[in-house]
Length: 115
Length: 114
Image (cartoon, rainbow over all chains, first blue to last red; front, side, top):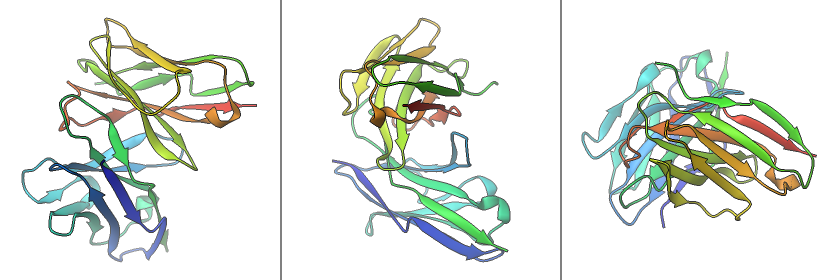
């Protein structure tokens, strides 16, 4: 069964510092991986996705993630944090098989930006 | 293009009642998925509809049901509400519902069961 683990329910960084949000997956087949962001009282917005093309994926708002098969990881990074990055971040993996079996989400990481 | 819209945004119900939530996908999207988000369980997949047919279903009791109309709009229904059904219900649409398709999420419906 597919699963996603996000290390750290809360991550705090200073404005201008590197952001690193960790995600490890478990999948019996090559996974498709996604990072979503959720601001308070809003739905989820896609930051980036990996669908077996380039292992380094660039997304919106300066975020990027690298797919590392040997480490079963898909960590999200941003070189310089901005106050507007404060939000909840979710890593997700899609099931195998045809059609949409639904996304399996991690528990989320709350990113706090210190001024 | 307009995004995914969900109505109503907030609902308060009492135990034992039933509720219907509505979702309008992005124009041209044929797949609609529903998710439940709670502080304890996180985001969990409920079901997915494509061309008016339920293709996949998550691990939820039969009190949770849904349907999709010919214009791809979808509704989900929860009967005999329980306190534990209090959650944010998110709808997401995608073009064809393929694994590689991006799912676009609506703002959600916040359901409170008293």
